[in-house]
Length: 454
Image (tube, rainbow, N blue to C red; front, top):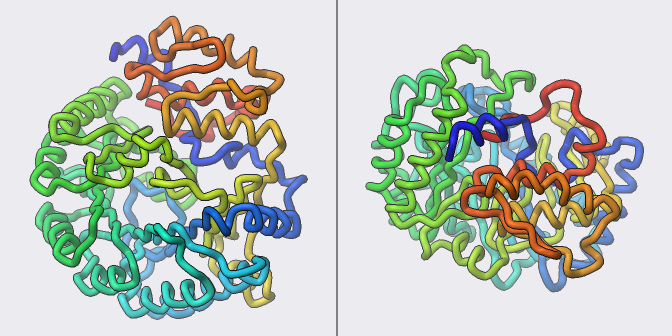
């Protein structure tokens, strides 16, 4: 990849876990009542044959990692666990009152924050409470994010006994100077122990998260981290760019200077080397930023063209509806999005008033649904088509004009009613998606809202 292309396409852009992206949600068409109607419609359409996904946000962490842009609450007081779980279960009960019949759970994911901040006993209470009001789809997948420093055998065994088979551990980088800069110090031995323990317990998919573009991180550091990762052979790897978004309140990303970050060219070198090393180790690139062994369900989903992407990231199968539980969690009914309040006390107060604690969202227009489909196809399959007239929209000709320069640069191939992202263009898939983003095109942000694409 040439530095000329990097310079040309390294612009601020969304990561497209949703379309429209959050800054373009329309508040005037959204209300809690509209969202509830939306959920009921989607549930009726999809529950019986497809089931639904549940994402549970567990926000507590004992210490702040300064690379993290997620909603979290830093505390060492573990008495916060039980009240929070009780409120999450109450939120789920309010959703279940909207459903006609029991929900069939196809996917359930615990994210954070640090899910393993919670004791195994409290996690068991949480999952048991969710399952009491639900049935399981014939092929379901439960997963959670674990911190290598505090995930115990008891955590792993308890969740395994509840049906969890996939776990991911945040590695980021093994270099001590980098770890100190991001306030996430964890020796390789900790990751090795928890990875081996997960496999001993019976987990069939163990993932590692590795980040490039971190402060003080060099190309050699990325190589060292991946070579150590090779010793453990995780089933899947998320290898993604650090999103430097210091304007987000409370993310703690002021612990280092911008000058400590690698340049865009060095970041691209880190990515290219990492991609090469992972390929040599037998990993296949999945969508954007993800790699998996051929034995992992994510790779198999890519082969079957069933790969899906939502606010949980890439998943091995699609559900039309995903319910987000917990403070700041985002739900997706396919026809709309809703986000819970971000403040813990507000979350508790709304639930005390028997209200689903959403505070903002977006009801999709017909054009939104069509554009969303194209962006999802590109992010999951590196191609999309409009052979079906239902996937055409008024401004599609303008999109194709915008894409012509990318075709000239060898990033995509444009056919009569389809486009494909080339291997050369895959690192720039976010840029390709931006050409379809009608809301972004119509209203360019006046300030930087998104991280850089490279």
